[in-house]
Length: 618
Image (tube, helix red, strand yellow):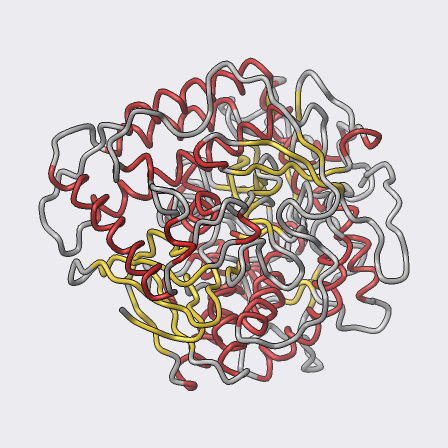
């Protein structure tokens, strides 16, 4: 067993910032990550970091834009924390040596981004995430923080009192890809989940193949509620053949969207008469698909994004990476012709329920970054708000896990305070498939199967118990014949892309739930075909597929129960925002394998003002 004060799971932007912050508080910190830190998906972020740095701008204006962008489902304490602290954290990156793009006078450049009332997006060419990741990795190396590289965390070691709010997280269990060892990591003070998003739930996504929502699924099965999982962002500019992202920075610099008839449709068809291409991402994605559905798409699939008018010098200076992506994946020279683009799954606004300090309802368990939901982004995230979320809330989670007093959080977690019980009419039973063998893959909830036992164990015994359970699960997967995970995963991905996409209909959502149920039943017979214990990617992907099943079901349940149109969530039968009944978060608890839907009211009362819901137009 390995022991540290703070264990950070994941080494992207949020994980690195959490580890640095915890180390600065004097904690013995280690990172457990299934990828080398600089291979983390943060490196694919192209756009920038929103921060109110200049005269004429303010964090209050940033907060208003963020709340408006969230379609008034962001929680004000989290929104204001992000916007107030982002300038300081952005300057910290600059002091650490991050190579921001600069104006001629030497100041850090800022450009317009979708949904912003001021050009406050700092950037490093079109590789902002890459620069951020390497800058913080340098700090990690400088400080000597231990990294358990290519260790795949598969289970949380959590006591199993009846109420999740009474449980404690004592560590994690992970699989060493190189040696095949399954070992426990005891955290004396806290575990921070920073495992990224669930993009592989869909088959057309900007996310890396490693983004399988592991942290969210582990926390969910351990008892932490998932929050607002129905809100999935579909980025309007992805390459049709691969899902590779074309940065919003192209439109921020002045790129134009055209349909097959050569119309600048954002204006000419009235989708966003003021902001045009720089409307919020959900608005632009719906506009593009409407153009395609109404016969004005190119090859009935995509639209064109044109940046030729910006000129070669400006494109090379600020968007050179985009030229390479378009050429490599679509065979298009962005200096000579427009690029084909269409919406693709990009980001999950929902995730592990946390407060503004990153803490969950389970003592000692934290989450930050895309896997967490504070909720900063509500029903829709603004471009340029993901990277500041990583550094602001990664830092706060790391500090709090290490023992720093950040004050009493205003956002409550778990079933505390005000909440209401919900229900959803489903065509099949969601959740765990009954009848599985003890230790079977379907029963890996992160708590002891006999109920109540680990509540009386020491922290070390709790971790050892989790290790034993995980070894039992892996042995079962490795020792039997059965279905390969790939067929199950592909079925779920295709169903989610077809039925739980930008446009959603009730019958389609119910069909997705049926497909997911069939996949769950098939997963009862899943087996690992590779018999080796080392570098066994088949084993890793089999475990990841279980996580995909849980998250796909959660997204679909949330989409079915929320009978309104808000932010990125559009329902054909309910094309209006219903503030009188839906100014609340959708919560989903695992509930020992029988998912339970409930709701918590949104917090619109900020430090000095209340954010009154208004019609959201651009």
